[in-house]
Length: 615
Image (cartoon, rainbow, N blue to C red; front, top):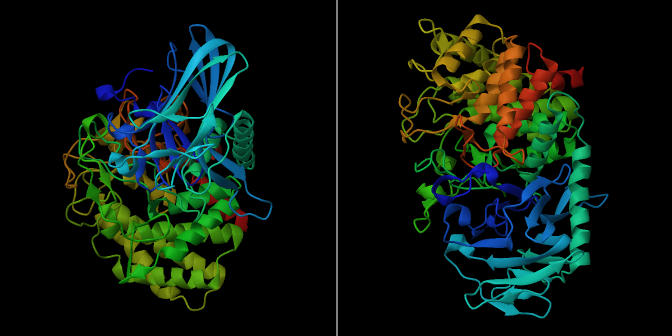
């Protein structure tokens, strides 16, 4: 693994651990460089990924090179193998989980601790644990006290236990040093949710390891897919499960904040929230893979919290259903490779994004098609949502890319306004909802479609454009055939694909979302190619009847995944990852592309599958 920028590991080199309550990122040298407590969106306890001088949990083997690493089966249990000068060691890092009880509805249940277990297979070697916990994104300190079987933080929120027992160093860090011979083991565990500490010896750690591995594998084995890129699909599904909060079922976009979309740039955002733009694809993917329980928990959480305040749908939610988080900059952190500012919170909560309505209605419709499980109250709220959109779709908005400039009439926003009305009509017919003003919706739906085809398509350049009156293209319009507004082989769609490749393509497999020099997005700086759009191009090419070309692009994209099968938000042509990591919508788009390649039809494979379930 080559070194990353500014002395930071490449983003692709990090391993992702999750217990569906919080996450940890482990660097290639074995240091836990990112972890927020007590939840994904809590303050950072380890933040070294954003500043080399802040907290991290180091695990080193004297004299050894960085370890070889892999996930155990279909799990988020990381296995590392060190070759020391006189010995070979194997380590397992994991956020402890166990399967839910038979009557449970969460599938995977967090134990509230990060466990690091190292065993010596042969020879001898010295292992060092050093835990430098810095609460509140590095602004706080931990004062450890000895509580017998564990060290406990002064506020009682953390405990540290292991075999051999950890000790506090003069600099306030905590850890242990142990020389292992063949057959020996060392373990250290960090409890992050308060409460009484637990004894942590080798036997306990090995039991927790077995439970975590079994829980993840059992969940993955429920998947019903054996088609194109099965390995990548299964891995992406496990990543998505790791991003679903155990308490509510909400899916966060990514477990990190401020990993830059361009090294040294200002495109650094907090993605630890639930965006409605992911809704339809989340529900479709989970249902298609046989995870109806998770699809239901996610959608019911969404519908319980996407209230229409002032007749406007907020585009995103916090993990507990809130609709506002103030954005602020953490000036004390240098940022990944000097990319500043480091932001927490997200101003996008205050934006109006018309596409959000369509994503929610698309998700609700396919869920009802497959399960019939929507409640009367949910159907009523969805009816109101469609009716509000019917009266607002002619307004400009901020768009899916959340520009920090003037609102405009984005073609993508109008596409999803059409989808909201279209799915609203079909949902009302499916549910025999006599209270739905279907004729009004039908009139508005047809008007949106007519406007998109008239104002969103530029005859002279032969392409759908980014916004009404613009001349530049936008990769978001790849969704036109995926949603079914036009057929994938419609000449206007095909010419748009070609124009997007010409203006936004890179390296024969990557697609940028738009040209920052032409798009007034309020930032104006460069960025990497957008991986979601790159996989969307694969799906759109399949629908256009160009499956061989689509397969070639898909193979190139998968060849550039990280060594552990993880994907970030963006990438450069040389394989450098950019943006928050791992990124939910990238893994969702990979799954959709694989399934479209597997089916190779004229309509989106996921929507087509949902339609077949009703028949």
